[in-house]
Length: 246
Image 1 (cartoon, rainbow, N blue to C red):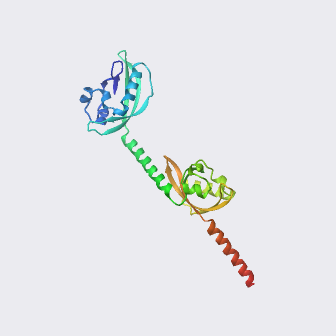
Image 2 (cartoon, one colour):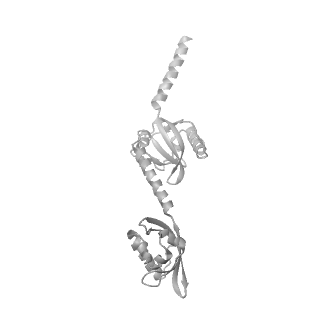
Image 3 (tube, rainbow, N blue to C red):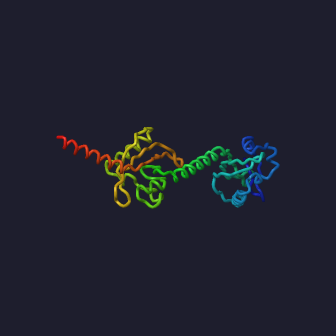
């Protein structure tokens, strides 16, 4: 679109069929209407302020998103990239408009899915967490509890390998690399140091995921300290029995 911005309101002097198609009107119909009438009410003040700045010679941001009303009453999100110029000695704005509705709806859907995921993980009885570069970017209360922290937020940014035995830390980093490259490793038991310094044995199952638009690793852990202690006792009992037999 090409719009003069030196009057009390913007005046479009060129609209192509693609721009008109986004709004659902014909080019002829759009020339008969106020360009600002297509902006949703909650964004009208922003657009009028932007027009006032343009009229006074300020450039403002070159690219921004705007929600508009189509002819059929549906809303559409458009990506506007504008540049200022002069035509016949008058200030004018050349704007390239792209229909971003599908992208915006997809992003909203992703955010809804992540919110639902967070809600489910928060009430899960087993420790669930999401790691990126060896640090928690999300963890539920069960994970905080098993590591001895009062709340899940205390784990955010938490360097997991620093709380593991050195060998386990190397194993965790190797598993993370393997998973991000498409591997599916079996569950692994780590010896982790709790907040109070005591040790806990965690059996972790991990896999790849996308979180907040970036690759990450989702992990589910289980406290197997009691099981490992019992196994150690059974091994010791077997040794004593063997010695007695000898």
